[in-house]
Length: 284
Image (tube, rainbow, N blue to C red):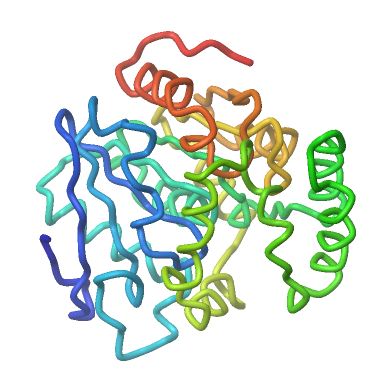
């Protein structure tokens, strides 16, 4: 497992999987170890994935200063990774909360981004947040599924008070609740640094007007991929995030929720690979 030094000396871990052109991958959570990304729906058959464990997660060191968990301060870690890999420009993929980190990186270092893929990315960096009604509207799309009658009231309770989390709501975050989804969900607690997550979006992390102004000058092609069943972000919110970039393609994966590479690996991989290779990506 390769490691490299962040600018403040914190040792960061990198997990390398697959063969092909390099693709740097930023996890979400926020502050969840990159292990949950797996092989990204066998994207490893086409790309060499460089999956970063953000500081204090997975196999990366805990920093001396907890304030460095803040999203804007993690941009320097991503730049240190690019330098470690010796890439003049890099293809970058980010999931969920990692999307805001990728946006901040692209805003600060636009010349270092070749192509950017934002997967069910929550656009906090743009001042956009999923609302409780967004999440409820997405959950109501599952009305005909088994267990909905029990899960929906628990979902409403969790949105009122996150301390009321009940595992019965977990299927709402997945397009299909099969054995792979159950195992993926069960691993979350041990993969997440909850204390770091509290700092990630704390005061000062985001300056949406400045980020929007910077991204308007970012020439890199961008793919924004949303899940049709995802509540955070819903497709409409993801579409608004795509509008922040001059050259963005927006696609919605049918039947997918927040982890689209689990819901339909083939569809997901075809879309991402087509974009990264410059082929036409069908708009949905």
